Amino acid sequence: MKILDAEFVKGFIRLCDDGFRQNWHERNGGNLSYRIKPEEVESIKEELSFHGSWQPIGTTVKGLAGEFFMVTGSGKYFRNVILDPEANACIIEVDESGENYRNLWGLCKGGRPTSELPSHLMNHEVKKAATDGRHRVIYHAHPANVIALTFVLPLEDKVFTRELWEMATECPVVFPDGIGVVGWMVPGGREIAVATSELMKKYDAAVWAHHGLFASGEDFDLTFGLMHTIEKSAEILVKVLSIRPDKLQTITAGNFRDLARDFKVTLPEEFLYEK
Image (cartoon, rainbow, N blue to C red; front, side):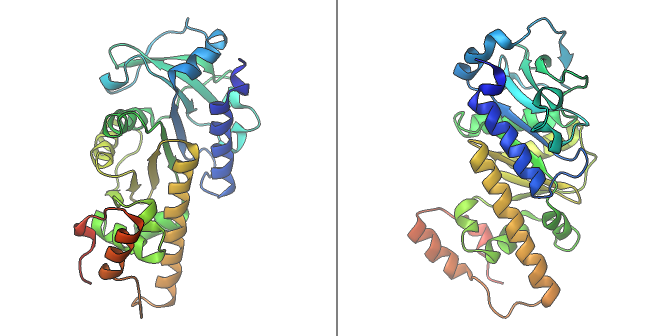
């Protein structure tokens, strides 16, 4: 099969385009990675080149030894992925030590995988273990309303979770485990990768203060939907706060418990504190 005919590649390209159309990817902002299924690798194997040199990842991900990923390129623009996928994305393989990768396809005009590769792979490793392999997508974007809230809300998991849950009834159903928050850190290095991966053991999404949002999911639709839901909730909260800082009414802790019962989800009590 031709790589660009593979369904996972089409899904990857669509998410990049959807994210750009949401205005989440200014210039070269954001990145996306997908852990490719073995049968998908097999279907495109004749199109891959296994002659490239191994490069250090910058961290160790032994739980991903021998895995294949489709990843956006460093310095590449999300808006261009749909126009020229082979120039703006790549397929890489992780070696058996979990310390190196090599490019098998893509970045045909030069470049390397996203500078956030250590964060992506460390979080893939965490989510693979935490979900028995179900999660395959890691997505980082710059949704404006989420970023705005990091300047006015305490950078605490329980505050962000509760405030976002209160903005839309669907939120505790879409992300019942809550949302994590990472204080500002220099992006692209091991330190932020470690901090994020610790949170992702518990959550499917983590806010990067003054920077953006990091999300994990089983497939492209679920991961984009998670990002979309969180950002829409953040947009509502920004509007509420701009009208008046004190809400006249909201969804209460008791309401959330009723919702959890009827929708058969478990909501951690740490987020159901009385306000």
